[in-house]
Image (cartoon, rainbow, N blue to C red; front, side, top):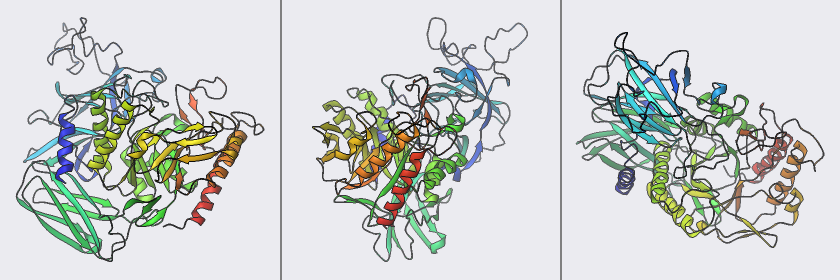
Length: 610
């Protein structure tokens, strides 16, 4: 455990321009005040509210800074900015889908929320917590800057200094900038829509002076077959204490007291009659952790995930992953998904397909997705947006990637559904890239050694043989590759003669495959963009999968739903959409859906693993 927290400290100190405050876990179990709802906004493409006409950053007390009050002191006072209800956006939510003028907008938008709060400072601290803001967020409360965060898909929080929060007329301002840069994560070039805004929940979090920052409870490795199973974990407080902690699992009538005399305390204990978490029986237990000053509850499933030779084993049993890739998007409304309702909608579609696994591409999705996956029994691959052409020789970029990896793991390390951390997707093979990516693999293993670590690796054709010899494969726990034989090269019938050569004796997972079809467009199977072509593609892929090497452990085709992408500009068949979805823009199933579902039904019968 000490290694875990030492690494977190190193990551935080190496990223001086980002949030350095401890990330508070399990916000839903805290005392919170929601700041969701309507926020006023100002569009500011020239960043006038942030810089003066000399392009110098405005100082904190500059009256023209958009984080300061927009209310004139008197009738002669000049104010060249103002917030008004007629310009408002919903939070959480992306700005692109809320007004036509925002559809392609990349730049700065200032958000303002006025609020009152009835709170007495009785030995308590108050933090402001954001589920995610895309991409850069500068946070100001009552004219004072609380901090800045980079990264569009991970949570962050800042402590509100004593005396700053008022009972009446607080004004919270967030400068949101979703512009793309070469030295960010992701970089300039992606294949998804760059949704800007405060895309996830905003809450005030009220905690005791000494509070539980984070905690971990999980089934110990090699414990799944034991009659009395071992649970191990740790509790992290914001400062050192010397008192007794209590761990409870009421359903098991289990209660254990632990002496704590530092800020971090580890433990392990045995429990009887523990039901393991499986996709078919996703058992969750209410867990209570308490001290003299703080108390937190969670619903946690207990399971192990490991590699045994060429197999992935869940609770000691071989697993075949019937997966699908998902973007955090509601196609019918052309917007970012952000709620539990959205999670149920997306994961419900995956269940219709008879999936037991989803790949949440290509960034950490909102917390409702992983918590809903816990309750539905769906295995999860969660990924940071190290995508394509990152600046692999830039150490600052590496530190940004490490921080996003740490924030992803910190939020979801108690979710039984999450079995794979992915450090990236389709990165080009060269020595600098392999060093960069292998460093992320090693970092993930140091932070959380209980899960599998992977990345979508490169595969290439050598004289008709699909060859997987990406050097990053020696570092990952499983070999995962994206292949599009029959879409980006040749025809689907090329699958019939395809052979596979995998350098590594590890489980092989097909992390992507797919073909585009415009929903409702029909032709014969040779007609590109038709549902029939996509159907043919999937039929040939399925037959190829049946001939895969013996280390083949599953597949997550690309993708569940059509999604927006500015790279896709065929004026007839795309118009700004990547149409590889098995569901079209309107939520209708394409013909390929039924091909894949039939395959998954067969594989479920063949592999009675759970």
